[in-house]
Length: 249
Image 1 (cartoon, one colour):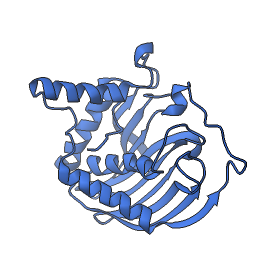
Image 2: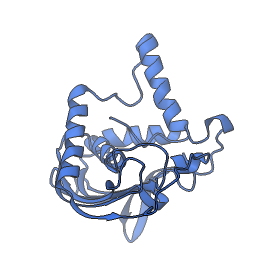
Image 3: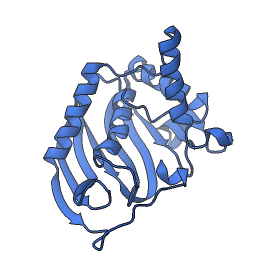
Image 4: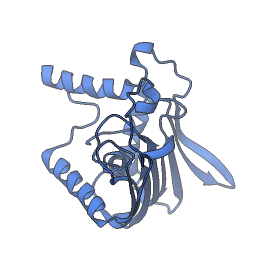
C-alpha cells in the first residue's frame, strides 16, 4: 500500500490487521458496506499541501487493503469545499465527501484538513458464507497519536460476540518515539529491505498500484462539486510553525 495507516503502537495491532486480510478470504467475507472518516486540523499550517486528497487516501488505502485489493474502487459522486486554510493558495480543496463502490459494496467517505478535532475511523460490515453479518470498527490516533482500537464482532442471539480486539490506547510509548511510531516502523521496513532484502511487514506499493492511486485522487479532485472558497484569513496571515506534534499529525 502507499501508506497503511493501521500500524499501531505495538505489534498486536499490526498482527491483528494482517490476520484480518486472510480471514476475509478464508471465511469468504464479502464487504457489504463501509464508512470512513479521516480528518485533522491543518488550518494555517506552515507546510505546503496539495489539499485534502493527500488525507483521504489513507482511509481508502486501508479499506482496499483489508478487503484484499481485488475489487476496483470507483468514485460515484464527490462534494468538496475549498478555502484559504493553507499557505498553498486561496482556494485549496480542504474537505471532500465521497460516495463510491468497492466491487458491489457502497462506500461513503468524509475527509477534511479543517477538522477541528482529529478523527480517524473505519467502520466495515461484511457478510460471511452463512449469510451472517460480521462487523469491524477501527479507531486510530485517539485521543493521542498511536492510540488505536480495533474490534471485530458478530451479533448472535441478541448479543455481541467479539472475534478479535486490540486496544493500544493505554500502551506507554517512549518519549523518543512519541507520534512517530508508524513512521518509524515504515522507515525500518524500508531500511531492512534495502540492507538485506527482508520483506516488509506490509507489502510496498508497486508502480501500477501507485499510478492507479494517483488516478483515483485525480478523479476525486476533478469530479468534486465545489462550494467555497471559505475565507479564514481575509486580512492575510502569519503562518505558525507548530511545536505540538499531536497537531502536526
